[in-house]
Amino acid sequence: MVASQTPSQRITKSYVDRLSTPETGQAFVRDAELKGFAVRITSTGAKSFILEKRIDGKVKRLTLGRFPELTVEQARKEAHKLLGQIAMGRNPPAEKKSEALQGITLQESFEDFIAVRKQLKARTLYDYQRIMKTVFADWQNKSMLKISKDMVAKRHSKIGAENGKAHANLAMRFLRALFNFAIAQYEDGSGNSVLRENPVIRLTQTRAWYRVERRQTLIKPHELEPWFKAIMNLKNDPTSQNRETIRDYLLLVLLTGLRREESARMTWNNVDLQAKTLKVIDTKNHLDHTLPLSGFLYDLLRQRKNNAINEYVFQRANGTGYISEQRKQTAKVIKESGVSFTIHDLRRTFLTIAESLDIPAYAVKRLANHKMSNDVTAGYIVADVGRLRQPMQKITDYILKCAGFRPSATVTDLPMKNLHNNT
Image (cartoon, rainbow, N blue to C red):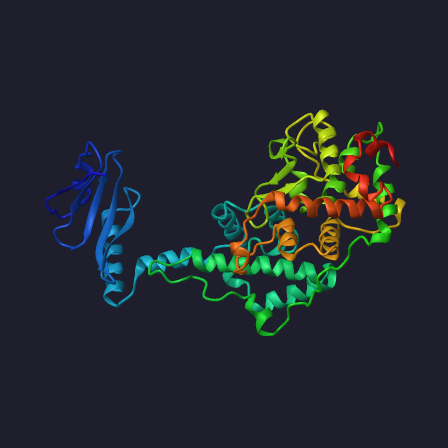
């Protein structure tokens, strides 16, 4: 931007009225009496009063207001006031910025948070938005500076009593992340954080976090047969055209150990039926994950490919997007089989079976797509999908044998028609 200057002149209303507009950029007219006081004129014709002064070793340009909304006399008076504050060691720009940030609300901070965190996964963003709308609905318009440690402790206890300990911890971990973001994001003109402390620290200081034991639920070997039979009984009918898709989805999760969302949003672009592999992108640990297909899964996916209606492997019956709701059919399987389970239990079942079959620990980690960055030895092992093919088939054979579906030795030759007719 081009900035031009004119000789110093005592600034008056009549003089400001006569100032011409620069062709480009902006021009400055400095006052002959009050050092630092000036008028700025832009190429659009806008005129405003400014004050230039060295503050904390740097020259700062403070905008006083626009002309004619602010008169010359008012602007000169404001300039004198600010110069007095600066002479006393104060930093008016920093104070003004800090004052503006004092009122930053929880909702405003959340909006800035998600704008900066562009890589948040859709499910994570959904969970954060749900927590904001439910757990912290009455705090959304509250200044973050007014959310105290006591408020945090009381809200944590309330959530734990009403919604469960795990949910209480989850909500407070989110709130802690939001405050940590705000502490780093909102600084005054001197570079000091407006928020000095994260109130969620109270839970750590008082050891108030709930102890939540990790879930250990899975489908036991003797439960696989009734579970499998109930799964295979999911058939499309006039009231539901998604049942068979959900059936195949649940089978794939059990036989690959993939996470629920990774499986649901899988696209055909990442399924290679010729190489008999599937690839999951944008995973939880941000590493692409390629798995070999067992014979059973190859047949299942080949059949689905023949009937594909969009880019997703597990598409909605209406042809748009992928399946996002499995609770109704999951409940149906639970009722019919008597085996209670969650989608994540299927992943836990897969990995537990893998370990029980004495599959090498590094192979199990590769199958689970767990990071091994802290394992020096693992860093020397080349990840080859071919080396996972035998362990993958071994796990599938074991599951199908427990399910009474086919003798272990012939599982890989299972034709797809049997997959749909054997119920």
